[in-house]
Image (cartoon, rainbow, N blue to C red; front, side, top):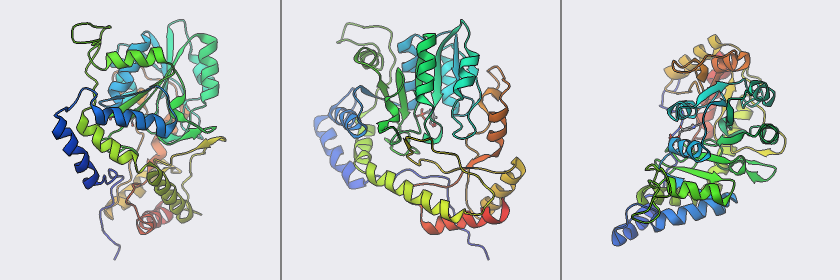
Length: 362
Ligand SMILES: Cc1ncc(COP(=O)(O)O)c(C=O)c1O
């Protein structure tokens, strides 16, 4: 009889309870619970140091990070964006009263196709919002070149890209802003949280004020702000987890190796890591030959307690509140792509169980 043991698509990194408790004592002693306290400051500095980034601001989540970035750049009108991302990339644009204009993706990385971006520019376009899909890099050089030639801002949704590099630089170092999520399911987490990396000190300064209601001292306001602050408790979890970053990345790569070996000869295809990139391996996305094969395989996996997730699905231009677009690649791949279980705790045996079903059903 086949083994039945629940294997979720992911799990939070198992934070060291003792190390968090050690930090909690300090938080209680100081009674400084939020508003950029010492633990928050330490995590902000450590995040910059770990990934080689100069202008980092922590915020309460990855969605607010996007909204703060759009606000800081004064985005309006049309924003060219990707149909393959989490809903927050699109919904935050609509929330900020911008019009998302979806363009097609490259079949190799599922990141936006630079030629499609260029073709979609109108006199209403103000920016490009691109996601490093699954932590694989967008063509950052081509995108910056287009932005420079057309006077557009660039924001990267780097929610999946912590730990990925391109030509030796963190993927969070590109664009006017890169934003990330420190949500519980992310490679690096603070239960809930986010970070914004600015291209320069002036933009960084705007985030500094805007994440805290615009306060510049108790009675002065630099401009319109919002509450995007991260608490000391969230920062404590983030600070403990970031100490394990090397081990988190190493484990992801090891698990990818297990999958690569176990799936040799199967009918699913992998995406491609572009030259010059070092992928954080944060997800294990596979492309099935057809939607039918995907559905059949996910059903058999589910019957064995294994969850693989249709991620990302559907193509974001098909949600009700945006303009649908003609996107042959995105519409095809979103029907055939799924992410296989991957987490710090995964074992080679778990991977073998998943691969066994894929080898037979896909
Ligand atoms: C690509 C992408 N963008 C944005 C977000 C939103 O981040 P958060 O959940 O921290 O608001 C997520 C998180 O799930 C994401 O995967």
